[in-house]
Length: 439
Ligand SMILES: Nc1ncnc2c1ncn2[C@@H]1O[C@H](COS(=O)(=O)NC(=O)[C@@H](N)CS)[C@@H](O)[C@H]1O
Image (cartoon, rainbow, N blue to C red; front, side):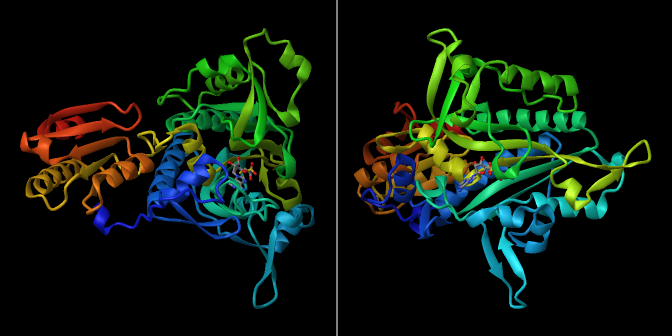
């Protein structure tokens, strides 16, 4: 991508409305724009990162056997009246009417709708287990949206829903999502800690929140320090291995971890000194088992091996991609800007032409840009006529992992400088070596 032809509205100054670093940096890097309170546009740079986050979420959902679909944002009120949540949900629900004056709503979540899809087609236990998910916008009229897209009113959610004949089957589905979440957040460069959690308006009696530790987090969390060393389930994990999935769950729930709503002071203080951790955290995922809470009232039943009708056991599993982007920034930035993990970086490298218009610099940059693009790399070429200082500041701000700097002096020797954004390490090398380093 040539920066001279891109759309990345960088802000020079810190926006005054931004209270936390991720909000400030997302605005300054031209990643998002607030359209109204708690409602944002994702501008091109931000959308690239959001896409990468969603692709990792999608890959890990698919690896765990979940099947992707897409449900609408607008839902009929009747569906929610069947489950009894229409009135219970409260002011967070955005209620609307269509031209026929039919009561509708902008979906804050999709338990009712996915249960309606399930009950329309699935009649036998032989079609179970089933896990359906989508990545879709939600609306919750939060009383106090803040911190940019960390807590917005319209936001994106991956929400998955599992269906099983028995409680045992549902627990296995829960454990599969539990393991998938550990893998997902790890691939995003985050250490998420599963914590026993309150079930809230979703319901049920088994629930874990996945929290990443961050000073600006809204959640207050208490846990054992051992978490930081636990192994993440490997890429070749067998998600159909019931005992194996239970072992992952047991391991990751074997030591104390709870949000403030579920905190047990005595249990926490029983942890030896030096091994206790209390911190602030950001909830990036939340999973629930809630049995027949929706299937019973909505008649989602299957015929069991005994020939009888059984309401299915369900769970739901949410991740907030539009919260994950700022959460990653909170966990990975410095005084110069964002430091993207390679897995979600908007570009693999940025080529900085220190003297656009200089024939040798232009040629060197074009050579590198063409070679890396041909090798399938996402490259941003800063071919603008900004001053070098501005180019360096922009490259540091937007957090691309590798900067390839072509200045007249180094190019005269057939060389460029390669800078690692995370460590700041700089290395001068030939243009070929720079290409080979990244290709
Ligand atoms: N206002 C919000 N802004 C940004 N992300 C949010 C917001 N509310 C929730 N999320 C994200 O969405 C995830 C799931 O939301 S939730 O309410 O906990 N769970 C559900 O809605 C269930 N239906 C799971 S499918 C949260 O863990 C959080 O990461």
